[in-house]
Structures are given as structure tokens and as C-alpha cells.
Length: 108
Image (tube, rainbow, N blue to C red; front, side, top):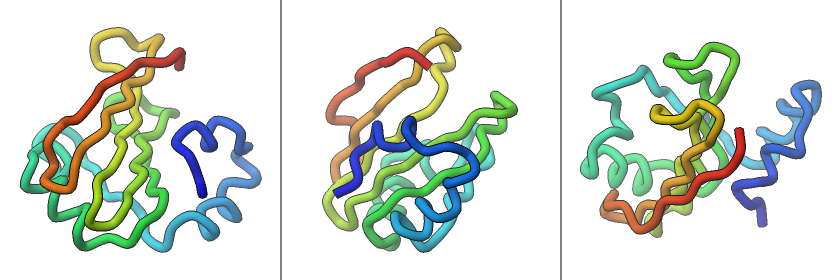
């Protein structure tokens, strides 16, 4: 099973093959106020999208990505550049209702 840190091991050249293996859709994130910014939106995303990996360029940090690891109907992990300290990545785990379960940080 694919784990959240597996994306760090994939080169840009291999990303498309990895994405096909991990997910079928693309994550549409447009910044503040997006679907993933509310518990209701996260719950809907988790319920409607198949389990897999989703990736989209981060509108606040050009050249960086937002990753969502969805486990359909169970929960998700959203991994993105920290808004507080850009040298870190926020890893936030949510339950199926879209509520935060845990938060951790790692070097970007």
C-alpha cells in the first residue's frame, strides 16, 4: 500500500507512472476557501473519490505540490508546505467526517 512519504521518493520524470498506479483523478485545489478547507468539503471529497493519491500544484508556493492520500470513506492525509514555516511540510490526518485527527511536521 502506498504511504504518504512515498511521494518524496518519486522523481518528476516517474510521477505520471506513479500517479496512474496510485490514483485515477486529479485534486482540484484553488487556495483559501477550497473544498478541502472545510470539514464538510473534506468529508465529501473522502466519500466521493476512490482511495488513492491526488496531487495538485500549490497556488501559494509555486513549484510545490499539495498531496492528498484518500482512503475512501475512512479518512485522508493532506500534506502541503507549511503556511507558518515554509521549511516544513504539514501532514494533517482527517477522519471520514473531515475532522482533524492529528498533525505532524517534517522537513520540506
